[in-house]
Length: 471
Image (cartoon, rainbow, N blue to C red; front, side, top):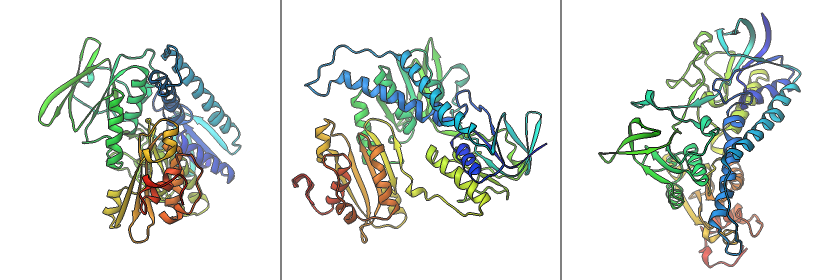
């Protein structure tokens, strides 16, 4: 039996961050990695079947769509065509390079870490088995990630369907697609395929898309997506699925009436489930939530004294950056007797539609629910000069502000490049800055980020009647 100081179960972002941290601390470590799903190989979800490939294809879709729309009259494009097969090849080449450079090569440089390919499961709180081999350790980190959740609707056994993994690796561009789910993943894939040329219908169970975001953003974005030809239907209750020839049919009810929609492909974007089945976590005394996620405290510690967990396997927010931070913190807490925590309120998140959605901190509703007396300001992007310069005035910037102190507790953006702009908002929330602090900070003109300053100024002035760069 091989003995280690730390065994990491998993091979994604949380696992790698933990392994790097353990290596720095000279901790003798084993990383046990296995392809729980076909697509999520070394490196986990993000690099293989998540952020990297999807954003690469989204970028191609946006550029192609811009050439079709010819937004600037001064630029006249000749006929453009989209080579879907070549797009998939380019995406695959990018993923292969990232997997090698950012994961395989990094792993080779970790002298204190041994990678073991296989599926590890607990035998006791100090032992796991991988195939026919037994490994023991003083401490463990569970970082096995999560995979797509597929709703078990009536008729599922008679049709084939897509998750994010298959949707990133189709051989031919489908003529039509139904996307079940109107949150981040569903909307990103819906718009991406729509811009490729696929007729897309989105079915969302809640009464609006992106129900966790500000309602102003949900409403505007829904209108923009519909303007691009995406059929969005909210407030639906899914009933069953069936097949007619090559078409998939989804039946649902809306306001008491039964309806149906058909398409060539059916994509499930209905959440994620943890990779804890087969882990035998109970044998190590690790408690799971009713949904199967590993239960941890705010220091990444499980119910077992020598076991920590990090990443998507512990639940929301399922973000690569959060997973990596959790993995690093878990190892630090396990071996340096630290008590580090993550303040999730300070963590920015983004939806890579176009325009993009990004937010950090509390929403208006959340702040009110916590007893914060808010004053909210919403600035239409049309009032930001740079939006006119780039020819895209779609969007808004919303600041959620504590009324008495003027402290900004939430920043919410719908605009081109919102995912890049939100980091100023993250610093504002993290360091408890006020709208006066923002106004007192000189911003570059002309930029979209200047909109955050204009949003702060709008609490005092009618910015539509201000000249550029007015203090």
